[in-house]
Length: 144
Image (cartoon, rainbow, N blue to C red; front, side, top):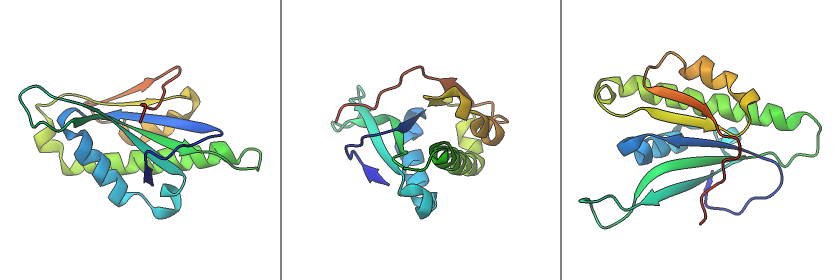
């Protein structure tokens, strides 16, 4: 998984907002994601300056760019589905590990470009009250 690499071709975008936990969750996903899945994924942080905090920008959202540049017909959906299942499984694991401290904080929002790929998210994350799964018609990765 690489940071801010230019990508081209067919892509699925998975955007995650986890409030003050976004950077921590991104790092957890990066560490836990299987390497055979990670090589299809780039990530792009969205950063902003938070008032009253450190001078460095904080990560407010992360967009995972799942690269589907494969010649085989039909394999793109398989790769996207496998990557989404893997990321959702890691998020589920992180949510289970951090359930106690998340109770009083904001919702974690997960959004996909293609709604037909949302089923793995619902299967893995639908039980969590703190997870909101959305569809983004045309999410765009942040400019780097």
